[in-house]
Amino acid sequence: MTAPLITFDRVSRIYQMGATQVPALADVSLEIASGEFVAIVGPSGSGKSTMMHILGCLDRPTHGSYRLDGTAVAELDDDALARLRSRAIGFVFQSYNLLPRTSALENVATPLLYQGIGRSERRRRAGAALERLGLGDRMHHEPTELSGGQQQRVAVARALVTEPALILADEPTGNLDSHSGAEVTTLLRDLHATGRTVVLITHDVDVAATADRQIHLRDGRIAA
Image (tube, rainbow, N blue to C red):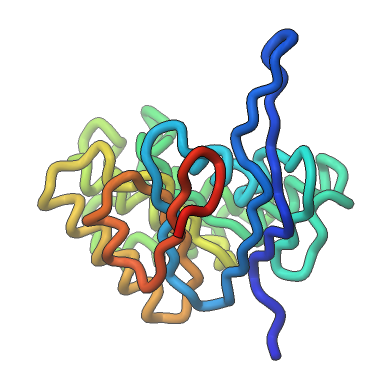
């Protein structure tokens, strides 16, 4: 059998707040196979943001182990972790996180810069990603010239441009109206249909219902 893309083995994350220890995740074990579309669902304070940070190699567990695409994340130093993150993960955030006063094309090309890819090839790949998402006529527009839904599609194009193993979408519809939000969830489903692994972090049960599997968090533990 193929090894899971994601494996959490009794992962806990405890934050030190002065003299107080605050557990955000407690003894969480799960597996996500390559090609799955999974929603991590929970209310505010459930631990889903902490889980997103660990999944995205932006934070490390206090206890337990996390393997991403066969790599034991705890064994990596910060530089190796950054390389794994840029190679294996495409991020889509609620607030888009686009560079201001920078064209859609250059925003999408930015992750390729960190991989040492030349400028003409970066622009070619970024243009292809934007065309794929129906933004071929918006390549030279800056974020302020785009609607919220268009900005989020630019963010999805940026997540895809490195051909990552995992698309990690953190509340991707949170700042959008219902129509634009539905467009983004449809886009994530379309990406999954092409074989992408998609992990969707959300508090919205209707958005979570678009995924094939749901993992519910409550008080830092898997509830269902």
